[in-house]
Amino acid sequence: MASERRAFIKTMGAVASGALTIPGMAHLTLAAEIQAASNRVKKLPINEAVTDETFWKQVRLAYSVSPAVINLNNGGVSPQPILVQDMLDKYNRMSNEAPSYYMWRILDMGREPLRERLSQLAGCQADEIAINRNATEAIDTVIFGIDLKEGDEVIVTKQDYPNMKQAWLQRELRDKIKLVWLDLECPKEDDSYFIKTFADAVTPKTRVVHITHLINWNGQILPCRAIADAVKAINKNIFCLADIAHSFAHIDFKIPDLGADAAGTSLHKWLCAPFGTGMMYIKREHISSIWPLFPNDKPQSSDIRKFESQGTRSFPTEQATGYAINFHDTMGTALKQARLHYLKNYWSQQVKDLKGITIHTPYASAYSGAIGTFSIENMKATELEGKLMSAYKIHTVAIEYEKFNHVRVTPNVYTSIDDLNKLIKAITEIAASK
Image 1 (cartoon, rainbow, N blue to C red):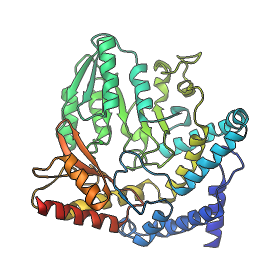
Image 2: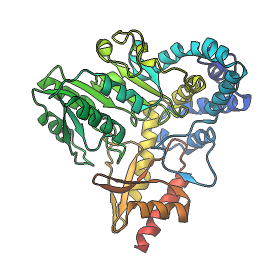
Image 3: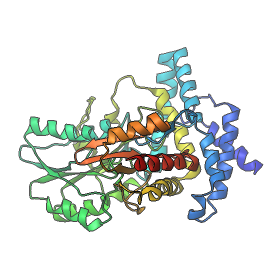
Image 4: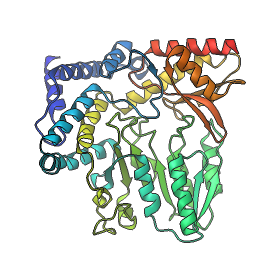
């Protein structure tokens, strides 16, 4: 045990950039304890590991959880472990001592090691990963960078994220492409439905298929690989773009598993990295044909780094991301997904049979993770969200978008069963009062 702690302390003290700052020993000790506990639960059957509350209480201690509010809106943005916060602060203070020296000559040297770490987590080659600020920047870079001409068709859905929909609408307005809109039925636990819906929309003019891997509005997971395979079987030249903002570091997959030609995510969501960190994947063979959003001197280069000409950026956030990866690795994505799915089902299954309650998220692990949504009959989502906050100090988010009208509940690994029991009590009392 002592040797495991020493080894983990050494790992956590190895800064991704090679700079010589290390976090406080108290946090290193806690990290070592979490790693030791993780090594123990990883030997358990998965159904036992996800319910080992002793371990998950230790994970909770790694976060600065508010005692005043129960945060169940981790789907918007996730908090960073204290260790990541500390490293962000240390790197920021270092940068301010001599900005151009520490930023450009010290911290910037950590970008390539970070790229390598991200590629390992993503399961692809390092030269297919670009580091940026969020999923919107990553995906919009591809949307505006891919060559399309008047009359080319792009398949999108009404359930895609607004920023990406607006990007496609701007391309339609500017370049006279045609957007083919799908309106998905969800929740749905049926691969064949999604495959057929996308495949039926393909025509000889289809150039791009935009696939949201995990729909943020209600937590529905789409069978991305099966959809990509189906549309490419009709036309092998179709370009598949995957929005993995809510699935990366949440659902256990590697990016090549998705069959996508490009993908984008926000690392400040499920990886719990600093706010304003993101990642773009482009399959190597397509890099040269995608134009960068922020041009450099070689816009048609096959070097993924051409997408990183952002001017001055936040070096501290980038390098603190390495610690978020370290923390994520103490659990691993498979265990993390299993726990998050367990938490979603824990609360939703206990309220689903209450009078007036409807659950709008699938239960099966192939179709859902942490995100769960519900509504109460004759109650607007905004009213329900407000009641949860004002009367119970439970922070959720109201979803009133397209045909959705429900409250989204999103726990994270630090969420306790006690938190969810309070949510169950609150929903039960609100439903009874209606």
